[in-house]
Image (cartoon, rainbow, N blue to C red; front, side, top):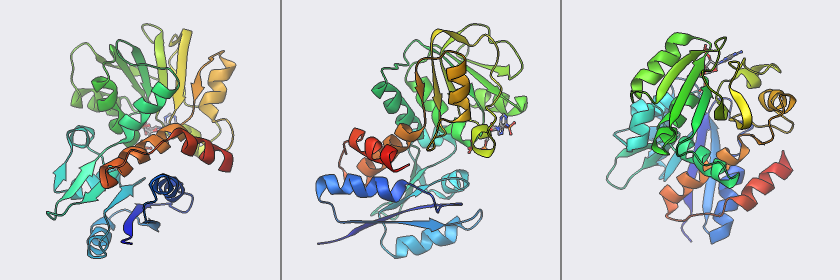
Length: 274
Ligand code: ATR
């Protein structure tokens, strides 16, 4: 049987869950898949990609800190990757194209749907304006959010991100220390604050209403600092980034193999392993 090869690249990569996730997807279809992980630091991606194409890989997942580098390296980009300016998937095509995609936003939207959170007509507050935020803003807008507030520690970066997706009236920036003009339906944490310390990111006052849900792109074995904060504020629906991780992987898997894996059993299996 022909073995299909894929890989995840980034740094640090040791703790990546992608090989586990893709292995469980492949088992659903009896697909012979070899999925490796490889430590690649900033500036080194082009050489590694050339090598992996030579080895016959179908594609790679790309994680921190290489998403912008992967985007720049691509010879073709999906519309959502083009909009995001960052890629988490590179596909090595038969016509020799290196095609960039960004499935992070789709992963978020699909995971929110699992939890009954719809986005059309909703008000959303996004914390952070880095690479992770860039990946999800196009999907939030495409899903039809009525209002998107972007709040970031460095206000200029929030302004640049909002300007990149200029949709008058829909996207507004906010200082972290400011007051949110209205309560929102959903607060999303895309900052790395909870990764690097136990302190949650500051959240603009007035953002939480009776039914506000909170989503953290971060996940771990325990409660994340942002979701702990949300619980302390009385937020009932709190969702971490594990489901989004599996959903973005499923979209990449479908792109490469033409197969739509079931994600809920994989989310459960991964949760048990954390
Ligand atoms: P990523 O690819 O994970 O988004 P990034 O591009 O380095 O990583 O962006 C990190 C984000 O987390 C930024 O929005 C950053 O704010 P700045 O633009 O001001 O740097 C935000 N961030 C990191 N640590 C933070 C903290 N302690 N409090 C608030 N925001 C923080």
